[in-house]
Amino acid sequence: MAFLIKTMVGNPLKGMMGGGEEKSEEETPKDPAAAAGMTREEYEEYQKQLVEEKMERDADFLHKKAERATLRVCLRDKYRLPKSEQDENMLQMAGDDVDVPEELLKMVDEDATEEEEKDSIMGQIQNLQNMDMDQIKEKASATLTEMKSKAEEKCSVM
Image (cartoon, rainbow, N blue to C red; front, top):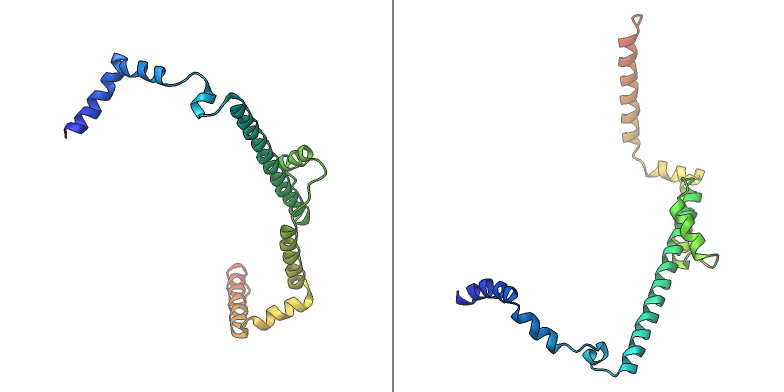
């Protein structure tokens, strides 16, 4: 209980008095290399490595984004969807060296072959074989009776 009261009341009072701030300024060295425990040259080399690694990560990230944009453009062309300015801008920024990854191309090709099989006459016949004939008959008779009832409502002769 005393600890709780001390932390709640003690910390704000230290901030008001300003005693805690002076100690932290004196303890921290002004040179960042000394703070990291390195010499000035080692620290500069370390900073250069960090910058180079960041640039590589950013370049890889942009390349991946461009690959995804290329794939989206291909899919939009395939399914005749409207084009996206954002994807086109990404492709222009990346240049001409962007290709769709092989794994994604394989997935798209597999989907295309499956769709072609479904769209063919043989695919339609196979779908008919898989359907339940009783269910088809029931749907057809329900549709016919529904059409008759609607026709009788609208037509006074029937």
